[in-house]
Image (cartoon, rainbow, N blue to C red; front, side, top):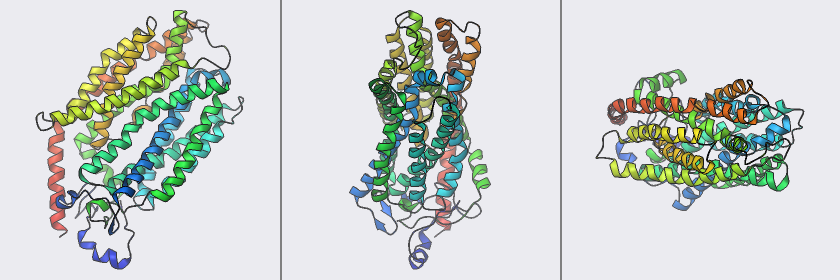
Length: 481
């Protein structure tokens, strides 16, 4: 892939000696940066250093938009009961709202990554964000006879979000290096559980206040429009590799196929990707269906009447959102503290923390599934523990170069399919509708076991791959002098 600088031809020629090529034959690939240059922590764009204030303002804007990204994604889950009653649809059909979003995201994220390597990343993000916000707003006006239109809108929302989530972290990486880069990207990902939880809370609150779930979809577009304006004026478009090459950027070209082959040869990357795919299968299924599951559990207990018409009681979404925010922040902080305390003392600390997170959440996950019909508070506590265990997995894998967890979300649709198949045995029973969704969740602990194994295998390769990457990087820096 290619990245171009933004300087004049004369400036680019003068800086050619400092550039790092991404070409496959004679120069480095992603991350093949000179060790000496990597020690700099000054934010850089082009040939001039960014002011510290401007660089952190840019990170703040990008984090704000990422927060809205996840708010919008889980607002639908927060009002799913209302959506099912409004369109008169079952679990499998309503699950399409998640499935089409994830599929469009997965299919188009590589395309935006390719375009981001060659064209102005800032304007690609702005274009994608505009599509996302407009499609979310349009989806709030869909008539109950046209559910397929809402499905189409959610697919287009995935298209818009793919551009932002793919490109924004690379801009942060090119504004900082060293410890500041780690802090900035950590902040970018810390807002994920916060945004997710706020999505449940906002959806529940607005749907209850207005009596119409569609108003919940109209908040993020307004807030997002403010974010786009801030992005235009406050976010720079640094050259690829600017923070590592004194602002010059990188030059060279490698084919997309070569890049894929290179990544597939990296065993630690492959096993890490399988691990985070497993975790996101678990959290994706639970995140989208947990409020509905908790509502059905209370119906099964007899403490709540089944929802027969809008507006449905969405108080579970509000509580679940608050639990998600608090547990997510605590989980990320716990993972960071554990890593700092154990690094240098425990070999392969990152994959081991991830493996413990995956395997440790299984008892809590089983408790949340089986105790829901007896005690909702115990289920909330168990779910909170699952989130605490899962957040270090997401954070450590993403910071260490793992793949996007959306692949796992893409594989989670079997849960509503299983639920509908089981509910067909007694379709008129509210208790059986709860149990059918409950039994479908048993897939999650099984997948969590696989994820833990994947991370344990990853620990066997990660040190070797790190050393190989470091030698490759240093060798290419010497060859470019």
